[in-house]
Each structure stands twice: as C-alpha cells, then as structure tokens.
Length: 433
Image 1 (cartoon, rainbow, N blue to C red):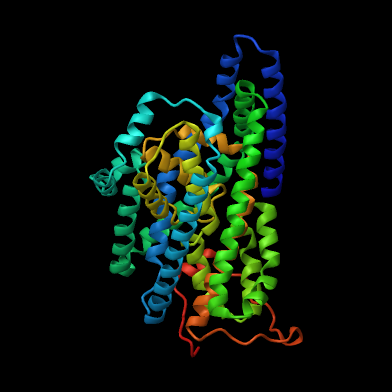
Image 2 (image 1 turned 180 degrees about the vertical axis):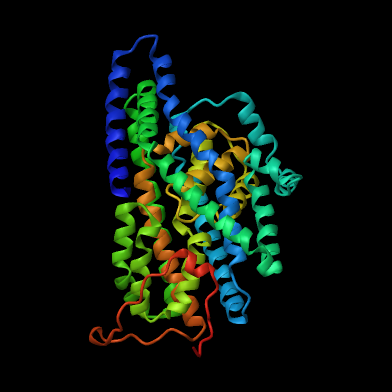
C-alpha cells in the first residue's frame, strides 16, 4: 500500500501541475473561483487529519507510559535513552530553525493570511500564554479543541496513574492500546485520500501562481536534504565518539533498513530489518527490544528537523515574522507534541497542523507541503532510522553490554522481529540473563 500510495501521490502531483498550468494559461476572471474549488480537496484532507489528533496522541502516550515497567535496569536504561532522545531532538529542531532562517525558502511565495491570523500569531506567542496553555481545565474541552499540549499533560497524568494502580488499570491500558490501533487504521484510510489532496493543492497553487511555484518547491526540497545531510554527519559523529571505529560497521549494517525506509517513506517499514542488523552488530535483543520502540516515539530526529523547518517555512510564506523568542517557544511545543505518534503515516503533518493551530498560524499552509511531502518524508524517515540505530548502539555500549562482532559464519540465527508493542510490555533487562 505504501509504494502504491507514493506512486499515486507522485502522479497526482504531476497531474496537478498540468491542470494548474492549463488553467493559468487560459486565464479569465473565474480562475480564482476554480482554484478555490480545487482547494476544497486539501481542505477536506486537513479536517480528516485534525480529526485523529486528540485520540491518537492520548492513546499512544498513555500506553507507552503505562507499559514501561519498573525494574531498576529498565529505569536506568530508560533515563539514558530519554536523555539522548531529548538532546538529539534539540539538535534536530535547532538545526531546522537555523537553516530555515538562513535560507528563508517561504518568502518567495508571498501568500496572504487573514489579518486576524497574523495578529494572533504575533500577539499571543508569549511565555505567559505558553505556560497557561499547557494545563487543561477540562480534558474533554482540550480534546474538543484539539489542544495538543493540554492533551499531552492529561495523557502523562493518566499514564503515570495507571502505572501506580497496576492490575486495576489493566483494562484501561488495553482499551488505550485498542484505541491506538483503531486510530492507526483510521489514519490509513485518511491517507488514501492524500493523492486527491495533493492534486487539489498543487493545481490550485499553480493555477493562481504559475509554474514559478515549482522552482520554489525545488529549492525547498534541496535545502531540506542539505539539512538532513548535516544532521546525519552530526549524529554519526556523536555515535563515533562512543563507538569508535565500529560506527563504520554500524553504517554498513543499517544500509538495508535505511533503504527500505527511504523507498517506502515509512520508519516502521525498516524496523524488523533494523532489529536483525543490530543483532549482528552486537546489541542484545533485550536492549534493542526496549530502546527501539521507545525511540520510535521519542527519537524521530528527521521528523523533528522537518517540523521546525516546515512550520517556520509556512509562517514565512504568509509574511508572518516571528521573533527568536517566539520561534523557540514554538520549537519547544513541537518537541513536546511530537512524542508518541510513531508509526503514523505523514505523522509530521499531524503535529505541524496541531502546532500551527495552537499558535494561531495559518493551518491551510500545510497544503503548500502536500505536493512534496512524499519526497521530504522519504528523507526524514530514513534519518529517523539512523538516529535510532545510533542511539540504541551508544546506550548499549554505555551499559557495557555491546557484544563483540562475530564472523559471518558464526552469526546466530536471526531472532523474530519485535514489534513496538513488545517493547511496551516490560522486558527483562538484567545483563546476567
């Protein structure tokens, strides 16, 4: 399905360019009206995306926290993992912010936002407003308003409380796991509408702006991939500080899962093969079975850089100037709200939509990204694989549990691939077992 969807999106993009160009060349006073009807397709898609935000974030965060386990080893390794994940997230977000401010790819679009949107975006982005918006007065109101920060706070309290009451809360944990699976299935249905949204978004923009908009997209993609290359260098260099020359072996071993992930634009597509290759690299499965699923929720380095890059790009496209303080607050919001949505196709769009809405920026700006999101998603998903492979290997090395490499003829048979759910059920991390 993933490969077909990518193909359909590419075809929709090409068709959208052709139809938009034909409409632009035809001219006429009705072009704006036709473009507005074409824009109906991405608008519907955006509503469907926003429909899944609240239950998805709630269910994934609750199940992740409630299933952590409470052993000393698990707590120690979990603390190291979260420390690495937070540091890597800050690096990724900051790199995206620096590059998008240096390149300023959105300025050439010069789109017009509603006056009240721009006013709200600059007026309410203050520290006091940010802090007050974190805490909900009602969980139901937060979900009804899709207030992602407040949903996250409620989810954290719920997950921790379910851990405290143990067996009494198991039925609720199972219910949240089922809810998460349900939302993933709904997301799969929603993503099948993506090619129509891409067609409408591209055709509408090209019809009103002309083919010059394509050059802007090309610049956006090239600048983003330049940023990903820098991020790879940073992550692998940090890994090399801990792993020494074995970092080159790790790079060689993870080539296949990275290529699978890149071609399917799905981080989860490469997960089974990544488990297998980390087995070969010397990471015990009881370690990778815990850290990798945790990383898929908390260590999406490529997605983090993309979200900061894309969010400020949209603000630039609508001529909304954000101060450094406002951008930092937005990036902190992205860092918090991006956790717990692993495995969702185009998950970054969900978070970007929520963040734009949170800060009063034009949510419709996501339509600008739909046409090239497949190409961007391929790169950021592959980067997520690299980041999690490095993190897992480094943490294993810090625990003194990284095993020597075996000659190919002595390698043990590959263990069955773990799923993300396996890591949440609490694994035995005693090094002696």
